[in-house]
Length: 254
Image (tube, rainbow, N blue to C red):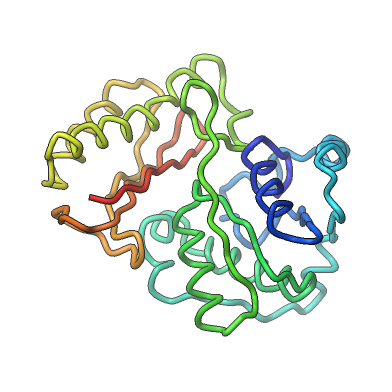
């Protein structure tokens, strides 16, 4: 959605390693924002983005208008039924419908062979993979690792909303994930105990208002109570720091 940062640029670099041509789409998609969310205030700077894309030697920028994507009397939306209902889907009920619709439209417009998506939006990645599988789309989805600031904060266009104090306190998301990894590496397998220790960190952070912390199976996004040997899991966090809603996650194999 633009206002590019190093996380986005890492996707471009992965594309350039694999593909003959690299196309970047920028579109702030109104249908994935809820009524009280930040669509109108979402950071935008196309000139800055364009310069970054030129520096990365991107072949094409696809920059459609809202009217091109959603013309008058637009009526067709895409729903992925199960994996989109939980977690982010509970807090943002129309979000993934908007995400899937715009991604399918962009795929149809650009006709890519590969699409490079960041793991920071892990559930979004799972939802899009499901859509591609179910609708038999001829595109290969490549999930790419989260890119972090030097202190661990996951890069996000929304980080610009944070005050200096909130920026420091936003590190609680990363610290909670590191705590969980430490507990698990020491043999912890009871999910409720892991989540309890993580939640305690948030309770000590004045600006934090936790939406959820969950541990899910990486392939199905089923919420789990116990970690099992050989399993692959996501630990997922969503939290408002002040008025800014941030998400983060880590993926691990037991």
